[in-house]
Amino acid sequence: MLLNAEFLNRFVVFFGGKGGVGKTTMASAAALRSADAGQRTLLVSTDPAHSTSDILETELGSEPTPIAEKFWAMEIDPEREADLYIQGVKDRIGESTAPRLLAEVERQIDIARASPGAEEAALFERFTRLFEDAESEFDRIIFDTAPTGQTLRLLSLPELMSAWIGGLIGQRKKVNTLGRMWRNVAGSAAGDDLSGKDPVLEALEERRERFGRARRTLTDSARASFVFVVTAERLPIWETEKAVGSLTKYGIPVGAVVVNRVLPPETGGEFLESRRQQEADYLKRIDRAFGPFPICHVPLMEKDVVGVDALRRLALSYLGATERR
Amino acid sequence: MRAARDIYEGVYIAPYRSAIHREYLRQRDLFLLLGFSDLLGVPNPIAFYTLELYPELLEQFHEWHLRMGMEQPPEGGFRCC
Image (cartoon, rainbow over all chains, first blue to last red; front, side, top):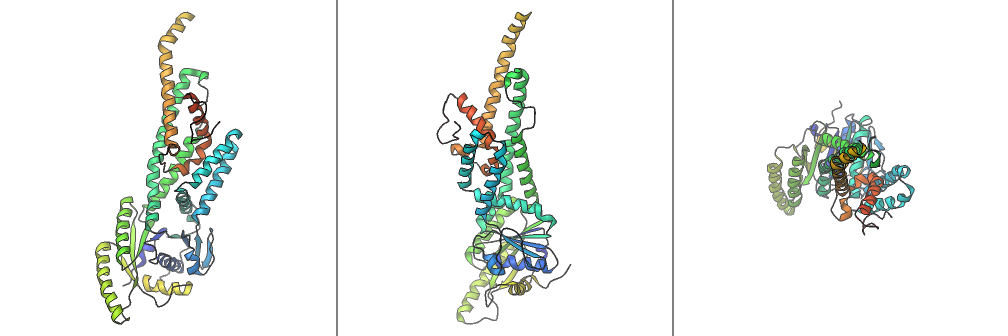
């Protein structure tokens, strides 16, 4: 069963699914296919286990590394991103902070670095920057995401953050209005001059603008799609069903479902025959659950998929022949 | 004439002025609470994105604890003095 690869024709394509179902392999093959079709493609992995480096047989870093013609790949390390972000904040505030406060401010920032969620936030920060900066250099970004739960949370951040930051902005504006009133009645006794620009408000509004842009990209079905990889087994199907529901709730378009490691018909033997019967039931369930989306079967391979040539063969089997455009 | 102005000032303007000041400080404190709720143990999902506000808010926090009659900042928060 071949799938027309229409879902790949987006600026941002995410590959997700339960751990171990073959996300990295499918994302790499899709990225290679996209590059072969003439699109400048960047494959981005956030997997700390460096499996993308392994599959592509190239040591990847946090900047795009050329792999093949029109094909680049990179691995983002959340820990390193968080450290860089913290260092950036410290550099920026260094000049504007009163020296007597600096040590305490830095201590607080280090505490924030250690808090749960810091790495996730840094990762999200890098994602949004990629959306914005990569547009001039690449036609397509393919994300090989972390296992489902983490990814869903990451993708739900723009909505959550926008709401929270909106509340802060509203409160800050109220403070500024009252501050001006207070100055009007108290004159010079009021102390701080509030007539100029408010750096706090500006920083918050810039943040909100970025969250807004990320959200507009993620929820635009002409620019983004999310591809789920599953295997014909109970837990991956169950987890993906839930994930599809969540993405729909956040308005992120699901592009396709790829069923990996389907037993090829030519394999035989009593053992495999009974596996195949069970698989047939699960495949039916997949059709029922994900019927509205394109579904694509990828056969179980004889050997591990490693290297560009093997990925090209895999891409041929699941995405069809290349059409240069 | 000057006495009349002082009376007017004392009877009409002063209460209005102090009410505005109180409200201004109240709303400022609320902003501090919203932005730095994690210091009180209330999770703040955007704490990581507001780190750049620390210098400004640390000043405000210092002013707050003095105004609340605490010479030293409360335990567990900013150590501003």
